[in-house]
Amino acid sequence: MSEIQNRFQDLFGTAPEIVAQAPGRVNLIGEHIDYSDGFVLPFAIKDVTTVALRRRTDEVIRIASLQRSHEIFEFTLESLSPLTGEPWTRYPLGVVWVFSELHKLSGLDILVDGRVPLGAGLSSSAALECSIATGINELFDLRIGLADLARLTQRAENIFVGVPCGIMDQSISLMGRAGSALLLDCRDLSSKNIPFDIAPENLELLIIDTQAHHSLVDGGYAERRASCERAVAELGISSLRDISVTELLNRQAELDPVTFIRARHAVTEMARVLSAVTALEARDFAELGRLLNASHASLRDDYTVSCLELDCAVDTAIANGAIGARMVGGGFGGSAIALISKDDTATITAAISGAFKKAGFKAPRFFTSLPSEGAHITERALPR
Ligand code: GLA
Image (cartoon, rainbow, N blue to C red; front, side, top):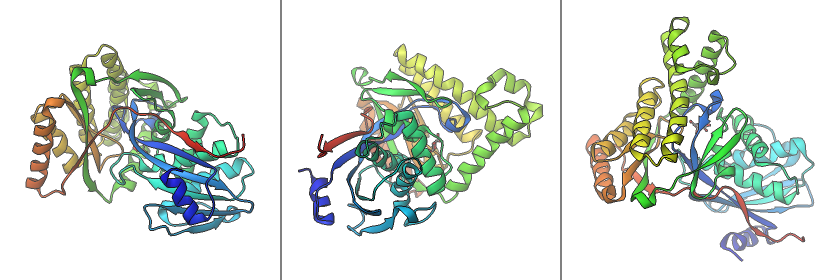
């Protein structure tokens, strides 16, 4: 038995029926445009959340986490309603809740082992939601496809947890493929795997967790979404996907200055994603780096979702030889990525640590990851 199966047995007194896991993500490019029907280019990272599940004969839901001193939280299916429970339990409960709206479920025992760094902007929440969804889908033989699982888990986060996220994080956690980034069309969730094979070029993607978490995160994200919705309404279009960069520039006078620069970020970022795919397919990493830098400048200056720590990480990486760098995820803290030569890893990480120390920031953490596999079942003890 695996570690999580043993711990499940110790806590709940019986073995789990199934073990599922789902990864966190980084986004190469395509930031803050998933909720505007844009294209995004994320990949699944190697860090995963693993969950063990067992169906019960009653309607009780029991949840525990290996990261939370084994306390068991107990609910019933009937009592589930948005925003109830300890904040972290809302992610798994929200997923149970969205499934229970559509299918007759029994109670469940659930044990979580979350190994995606928390608060680093690497989507530990999507990893948790998608591991639970993958487990329930299999356990109750629901045969729901990946795009619908992404929509369900996003709904769990939007309604039950109360976070107005887009669809990117859940989609990549479910659909990721080892060796590839995922070109995802957020309008219809169609996708294409784009090989991201940088090792032969002696390159690596450095992930820099700034360890900064600013309190404006929640309001700031919702406010940016609202700006995009306002631009769409005022321009009389159905989404920012439907307007070219040139057309937006021609219609600048129809928008107030802030709404205009928010929309300019969205439409230029959508164009950069497609250029990045062309660059990757041509193995033109210098061009990819240029696009990463342009994405960061747009997020910093037009969308204003960066922060001092993210700018410091990006600027220091570039000043010390990175080919390109940018913030990833929602912003206001979390992580940045830098495309670097492997030969420069030590210099760049030392320079960033030094710059953070000098600025009086918390010490940053560094990771690397190649594109890894999306959510899947790892152990099964079902009668087949
Ligand atoms: C967060 C959200 C995503 C996406 C990114 C920004 O990670 O969960 O849906 O909007 O921010 O690209």
